[in-house]
Image (cartoon, rainbow, N blue to C red):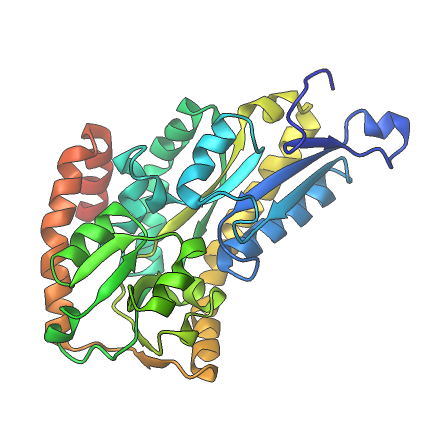
Length: 328
């Protein structure tokens, strides 16, 4: 390889024979979420697939749990700047980059896994364009189980929503929850525990998966399955190391990425059951059918927020969204 990259991005595998070492590279893949989360496990699967398909010439090294020192919303820039080769990032955290990144986490828009997949496929060209504009290649996506509300106290009626001081994961969620809760703010998972310990936050908008990975049951013993959204994480790669690979190397990565995306969609249903079993084993009370007045309050708050998103997202995003809604 003639190209030179930062040490954190690409490392020559000196242990290999000289002929192989000239092409063998290690690519760091950063992720704020734990290795046990659904996105962390996707990264591990992708890394194994790349190594296998490239005959060991390309090694992807997952760096989960914010061990890169970066929060999700900072990862996109880090890859664009060449500080890391790859990142797996929750789309909603990138809303300030473009409203399009918020599409998968729009509240109550994708009630089923089939709906979430249909919206993703319709929006995929837009996602690819957004990453290309930032000198990156979209590799694979990770669908998360539906977001619900973890809370210190059970949410038995709409009045209970007003007592929530809730952590959200994107601007849309913050706008929705601010209409019905005492307070709502985006907080990185890596910064969450001290706020839970102090009582500054008493609820978290998250899937059972993300919450279980962070063991939220230490602070929040209730989970309301409100079916808020099925958000996506996006794994992308800097175009600089991508361009340095030969044709076989790029093919190996693309094939591994396709396998990872398909695996994650297939694994979603089983993952939800696993999460709930783990949560119950750790004392979490799960409300699988929240009261009607709770759901009505959430949906009413979401309606205006989604309408506002549509006006800001641009004509192409609106076309994708409206076409998806017409076909449902």
